[in-house]
Image (cartoon, rainbow, N blue to C red; front, top):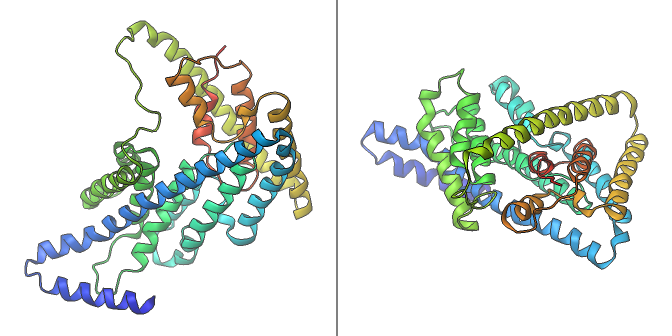
Length: 362
């Protein structure tokens, strides 16, 4: 593998040395790492989405076979997901967005080891494995946040493999562009990726790298589209017959959902603080995980199975089919499931479950 990399580096240097226009050469050398990272990110994001969807389908297949199996697979899934992260990559837990932001803040040569612990190939592998195990176990988690940490890891690794003769590229810019590309690939929203990065880098020299950022985000989105087909995250809603009067309930529902979402975040932060203070041993953590898993399993078995998984299918059904009804308690159960799953210590995002929690209707 190393020999192949050396050969590729030599071939690239020879090719670029033949370019006489120094400005063109410099611009290409600055842009190519971003382009390579974007293509890889788009590919990995699509594969991760397919794997995650397979995990959710497997969960429902098992429960359609014997619904009581949730009492077995939920504790196993929660504990195994936590163990994979704890044992191999502690910084792969949760959504991954805080880790990416920490890596951006630490992006200097002195903090190389810390950045590597936050963004690496190992993170990619165990992020996918842990979230897959958790969703098979009934965890109410998503893949969108983890995709951002995965993309940041891809871009950091591309930056690390650049040869010594390559013009230096800001590690901070690479990581942030990776996060933006991951967002674009996860949701097929290049504009969202650009806005995300511009917002985070508004305090820095964004003019220096804006072209690379824009092209990287677009390439990541196009790569995802090429592999998965043209799609929108929540499909294509029809708004032809929507009147302005609908804005009032939209504002009311949006405000209510925002308040509940903020309280959900506060609750999860308090749960994490409580865990750090009270659960000092592995045995205590395992007992807590089994307890959380059994709560979710009991709700799924006795009340409503829709507490399980990312919940994206609930949003799609409510938006695009005639089956608009959801029991009033579904959003409450979804928030409870998200809180218990997200604080488990395994890998998994909160974005899709939070969106789903706002779709309940009586």
